[in-house]
Image (cartoon, rainbow, N blue to C red; front, side, top):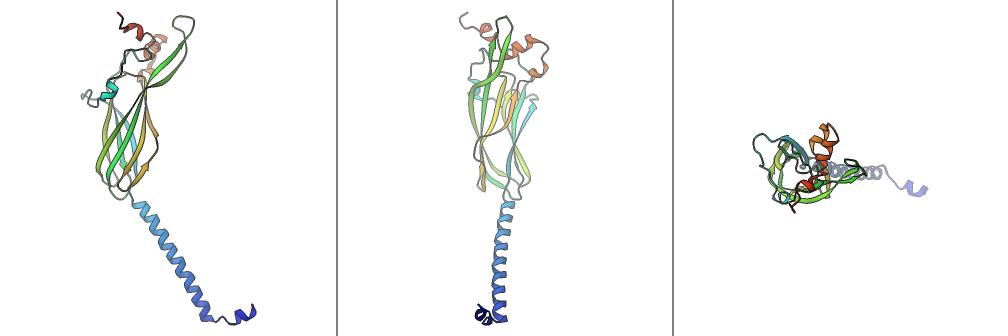
Length: 216
């Protein structure tokens, strides 16, 4: 070992240090490039909106949902003012997003009720799936630090509850969501304005199968 160090000159030592510094510099450059490249890519996310539908009633009608039979037990007997469910796709990156494809699913739910031994007595109530529908939207271009808006569904109280999920979100530049992600839910607004048990029974549709019995 002593003989080895005796053979190392100051110049050799400087050469080794120079090589080590060069390797570190290369690593730093690669790391900075990866971080910078990641930062400048588009950053997409979805933001839901629920607004009053001011005068354009039914502009976001979904034919598949419209084919459901809403005259059955578990669905509201009362409606509310028209509302529009929409989504915004935001790009918070420093570069534009191109060929954006957004796949959404809407799970429409109805009430499942367990009644007690006395008339008007509801022992339990919860929402169950009534139908699931997918919708695909395409956006050619979303500028950096900007967003686009899309109507999704007009709501008027035909069902008590629904869940909105993003199934996937991608663009030419990258994949942002690749598994079902819940982003919003809708609940009939009159659930927050109940005056008595009769109002509740009407909202959960206890008597709707009687009111709309097709045998009469």
